[in-house]
Length: 234
Image: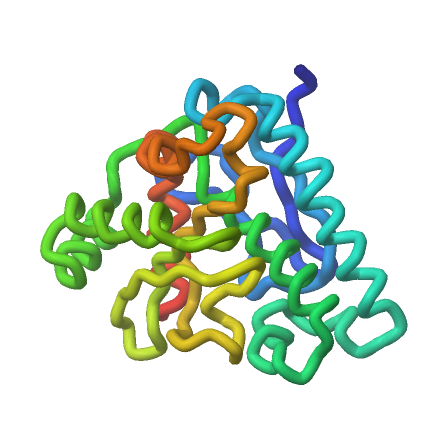
């Protein structure tokens, strides 16, 4: 299996500094500027046995790349080619579904790949404190997040996000929507994303979405989640 280079989603942005506790791991710059297809920070088989290599390859190189190609084709020749994704999402109701669905698919998957790692560490102190404050305990948070993912009807995403005032919340969204969009009932900045479309797990788990969700905790990149929290609340 060919190992992919470390990810750099840029356009106009430069690579960010290494994340705490992750050595040379490179994260996405903030804000999400330019529209460039990101490279994975790990090999397709690095998340096994929790996410298998074939699923990773098809999910990343077919599904994600397809969203990216359709999104960039839809915005070609418009001002959106130089508009950061969060700014597009703030006004997503003004655009057609091609931009909404494919822009969401492009952005959501980029976050999803980044918030997983084969080199999981303990939850950093600041993030752990925030989770305990918001949900009572880390285990309660995992239960609530897992329930949002397991019970979401049809295709979509489960999210941990932070409101502008700093409060954490858990939500789920249909299709390729996310908490940044002006069409969702609860808005905020995404901190943790879990894809619950069937193509994210069906080759390995078939209809056992709950098992896939439970195994997700074995590959969460907590350092990235804390980094997003720091940036969102700075």
